[in-house]
Amino acid sequence: GDRAALVDAAAGAARAVVIVEPGTPDGYARVIEARDRLISAGFRVAAPCPHSAACPIVPGTDWCHFSARVSRSSLHRQVKGGSLAYEDEKFSYVAATRLPVSPAPARVVRKPQIRKGQVLLDLCETDPALRRTTVTKRHGDLYRAARDTDWGDPWPPPSADDGEEQH
Picture 1: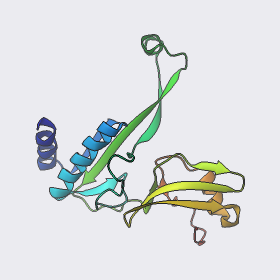
Picture 2: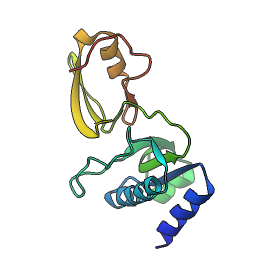
Picture 3: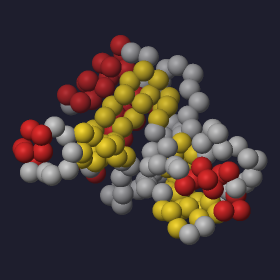
């Protein structure tokens, strides 16, 4: 109840709202709940979703989340018993606005799989649908862009407009 009241208060007070939760199934469920409340309040999703329709992920089968590398202080390493100077934090989020928005045509929702001569991208698309697409060397600039694409990036990238259709 408190979460719903907080989202409703934010929706009533702001033209844009960003909700961030841990990248767990429970965190994702809270983000989807907040996303639905924001859409009901007249907001449009700006990110990460390329649409404001229902999420195409079947509840309980998967969850939408992303990863960011975060630096760790020496105290942080001691407390967590880690040896690396960084940690990859998983998170789920939604950014929604009442302002005009042009979301990405698609979003990379899993780490791209780079194989010899091809890159496999798992995309959430405008339709809304989840789809795996394969970008091969014959796609030229689009293939080079796919090799540099990260989990969470929009697809296709604005700079990779070589006019070729991806398959």
